[in-house]
Length: 287
Image 1 (tube, rainbow, N blue to C red):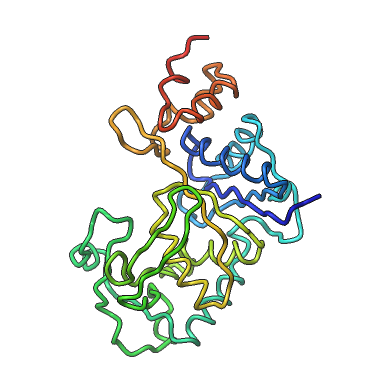
Image 2: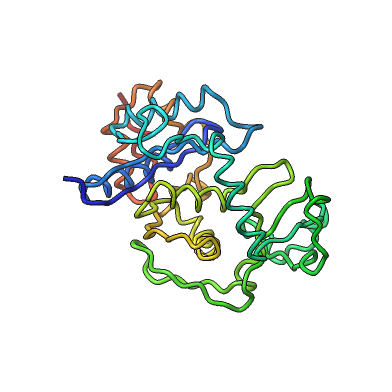
């Protein structure tokens, strides 16, 4: 009997999945299995310039090869279809309208150069926006090609419990600033899309990498503004390369597709996945 647990895998078809992805998705799969729950595959293809059909096909094939299966998704269907983000635009626009009506968002007219010069923490994933456009008058009819930002409650501490890292605390305005929710090319940001989709798909726990801990604070604020529930959280340690840098899709040698071509077996990868932060064992093992 299903326990009510609903987890999700949320890859983007912008490149081949690598060993770091495999580790996070394997943990998500195991947690769903342990809970006797449902696992959902969501195709997060909101980057039209980089998303490709062959990457979409590869990510599903590679996850199946690894031994991960899901009960709902683009290839499996389910009660909350479509499971491809590019087909869910109307839901994101409805959320944008709700945020606008509540006074939570405003258009940002800053150029990329302006933003690069104004960010106070360039090492952060988005930096701390200084609020340059906060006080400007809003004329929705004139803002068709503007970026839209969420107005964070400066000074408010956003706290949550993470199933792996424990209690977390981030202060709005200090640790992160007003963040993008809608892009000038008429697409929702990652932050808005995942909040809408996780609520719509009744996700009970989000399992993902620890580089998104701060994004969790942003998403909690968005969910609250939209009167949506927030799931439980479980952030995983990231895998790193020999230089200590987190794995990215540029690490083609560690892609599941390349490892498969080299004759590696799922058991090899699962063994590496269970070795915290290490990938050398699977790469060095001779066939």
